[in-house]
Image: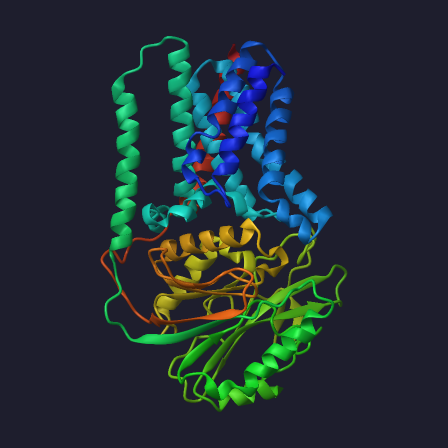
Length: 505
């Protein structure tokens, strides 16, 4: 490659990395792909092969993942390498389709193929067995939740669309300028006006949530900060929990205590799920005025490939005034490789305390998501809709329990928190997060951090969360999945069109 090509490559990489934690300069993503697209045009003129350009883009995203998601090696070196390679490969395909469409010599069509091709890639990345949508472009707005109110209408798909549209429009503008074609100022000001209106609309939606003087529930989200790499972390968990139960009388009345993901594992539940009512801690809480929402770990070695289940359990004291429609939830979105073997038909769910195939129970009644389920907006939207139709559940109150201790003091903890802010906006709900090593937090429906406990510290977050709230636009719901599916239809239509035109030539 010539020095100019290398400089364009490095400039694009620098911009894309800068958009994510720890730098969080989200607006860098609005131009980060422009150098790669310009490089594609230059290489197409020189008649370089599609494979060469595809490999360049693959290397771009591989270097991006190594620079941005290096912390995965703490959990597993082979697993992190697989994530980097697979994600990089998937992200390079929209550029390949863009490059091949340049034969038409129609920049608008090529730009549209790139835009809708990327949207289609994100859709696939949410539903195929290797789902890992951590770096969906719309997630960059988690750093700027003040202007991300439009997520309530568009979800992450709308954020991704804005980022891509900016890249495509600037790319077309620069190509026209370099070819000395006439460019109207209306083009530039129209682009600026569109984004200004979009962010203003988002701010209006955020401001439309009236919190008022609703009845409130006292939340205590604990952050034990137990190192998962310690020689016996389960013993430390048991010691912490035993100490908590011995001092449960000091917890204020009518408090919902939230503990992180897999906290009761495995000394309480192992292999098959025993009746939780048999445990002393359940009886203690049932005779109190508090309630407990906690994570546990359920594992089965009775099938050909191991499935590991994160579960959440709710235990209600007799004098606790609030309730949920279900007392347990089993994680539906399992981490590929770590919790589920991809492309293997081994879906197992739990019924009546035993592992069985073919059942899906308790999906929505307990409004909690576990760990990286925060990446899936539709999962939380389903829980929010269930809350609104339930006689028991609070209208707009959701939970996330996780253990980011595997990646302690790395940018992943901030990224996970930012994404959860977007889930709060998208569902117009209060979000309570309990994380083993941080960042535990309470987030309001506009994505604002109301209370938090920093990463790497033992502590707790206490906050009184409203049970109900009034929305000025109550019928607005996220259209994210419809935007994605429409993008896929448009992308396939454009591909067929370009193939037919190219064949005629």
